[in-house]
Length: 151
Image (tube, rainbow, N blue to C red; front, side, top):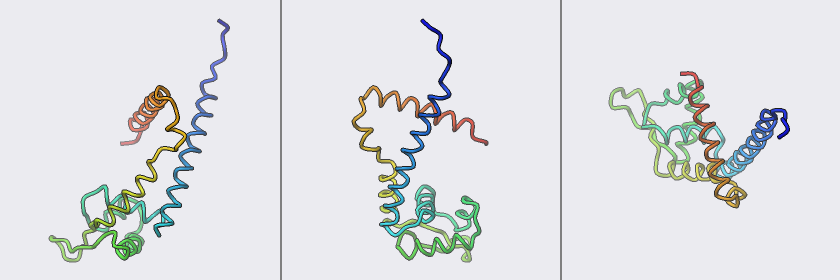
């Protein structure tokens, strides 16, 4: 067998570029769905965050996203006007409003999540063995990125 130079870095870069392109295509498709639903990306991100958390005060969103509380209020106003969430007074402090997602808000989030996580149709035609290999690679990448994230 003839020794070949290690070209793993080049292959990895090509594969990663393709994965990024596919990911961008999914984000673009999801953005179109958001726009059809009358949502901005920020509104969708806030709604997603609220759906994945217990009800809490508005300032939690500002902290979570690292933005000014006044700016959060504007987005929350828009989501509330759409019926995606309601503000309720805090039982501990009437000055504080607790954000609670409505059933309509959860339905909207589920529709967006389904669009974002739907695999590209081309992936469904890939042989099962290749899908399992891709899954193993994705799990390895996910585990590596999670363990390398700063605490």
